[in-house]
Image 1 (spheres, protein in one colour):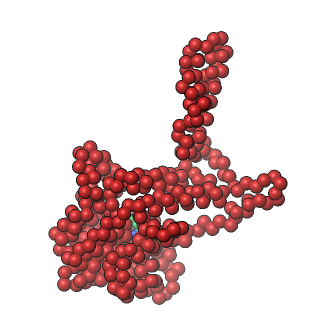
Image 2 (cartoon, helix red, strand yellow):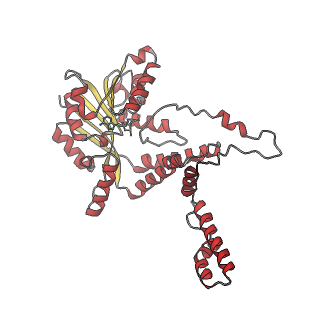
Amino acid sequence: MAVLPPLPLATFILLAPILYHFSSPPALSVVILYAHSASIIIWLTSIPEIRLLLQTVLGFSSGRALSHSPSEMYGLQHTLYNIDVSPQGYWFNMGLWDEKNMVFADGCRALVHKVIDALGGQDKVRNTRVLDVGFGCGDSCFMMAEEYGCNVVGITIEDSQYEIAQGRLLKLTDTLNSKINLLKGSATDLSKLLNPKDKFDIIVAVDCAYHFDTRWSFLRSSLGHLSHSGQIGLFDVAIQPNAFNHPLKRWLFDKICSGGNIPVQNMVNADEYEAKLQEIGYVDIHIERIDVERVYGGLARFLKQHAANLTEAGLELSFGNYNRLITVAKVLDLLCWGKWIEPVVVTAKKPM
Ligand SMILES: C[S@@+](CC[C@H](N)C(=O)[O-])C[C@H]1O[C@@H](n2cnc3c(N)ncnc32)[C@H](O)[C@@H]1O
């Protein structure tokens, strides 16, 4: 991204005020003043974020469809008509990006598979009763019912996601539909949402428990809804030991967490996480640390490629969508660089 202007432009931007100060006659000063303003505008509009912001604020977009040369009849301009923009899924997790050329759904499904593998693999999960907490728009519930024949109860807190998931559920086959029951409410209100007698072999929370207020109260009430030797399986986030030893860093991190709906009590390192699970009463605890590159790095690469593909196809990105893709990708790159937080896959059992 060109943030700094090219050298001649930068030199003129810096020297113009001096030229203006010493110039005479007044007509020359006016020319310098206009040229200076114009060069600053040219520089600013060369920065993609500012250009997109201006396009959005001024209410126009270049709306570039795929161009074709005047010597051609059609060129590639019908590309736009051939793009299917209906979502193939409604995944929301960070994904696990171990393979090349993965699309978003591949990454997200791989993350669910990672949790299933940590729970003992498909033989352990097949035909079990699963509680899927923080299910987004239902993809992981549908996946576990379809791939492993699980009977799934799902819980989400958000109205919009619940409505989409219910609509998608109605479109499934009767066999699949009968295996899935979606509920709306909070992970921290299991006692209100479930009957005390409702027991599950597995409780999963994929990329969401750090939001629960608090994760520990959710895990405590989960224990009461697990069958004997039932397991929890989470994809979650821990902080790196010593990442926030400095009070200023910790203060900034706490502010970022509260802005991102993450209770600060949830932000512990992997050893503290394990100790909390023990204290709550879980046994056979395993916490696998996942390299940031496999999660945040992979997602950042996908988002940048996705933005490039959209633009290549003629779908100019609005300022909002540019932020959703490129700015998020840059934040993810920063997380890879700083290594302040680490993705973890957590499994634990209820004692016999
Ligand atoms: C990053 S998304 C992951 C969604 C989904 N598990 C997936 O793999 O696509 C986090 C989800 O957690 C949900 N969530 C956050 N706090 C929650 C709570 N207290 N109870 C239930 N769901 C919650 C959000 O609505 C969101 O759908």
